[in-house]
Image: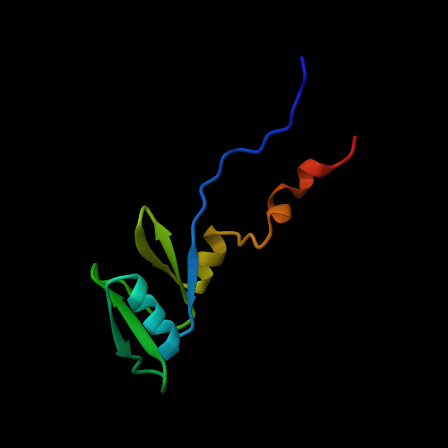
Length: 98
C-alpha cells in the first residue's frame, strides 16, 4: 500500500479591500447592489451601504460568502482569514524531503 500526504479541503473566498476612495467605491457598485455615500468623518472618503444594511467604511474588507458580500473590519478580517498570495504558501510544508 502506498501512503500519500493530503491537505484538508478548504473553502476559498474572494476578498476586496475597500480603501474609501471614489474609484474603490465605483468598483464595488459595479460588483454589487449598493449605495455610495460620503464619509462624514473624512474628506474625500466614501462609505458603501449594501441592501441588507451593512455599511462598509474605509479600510474594511468585503468577503463574498455564499454569493453575498459580507463586511469585516480589518481586525475581524485578520482574525478570521489568512491571505494566501501563492499556492506555495498553502502547501509548502508538504514538499519536505524525507
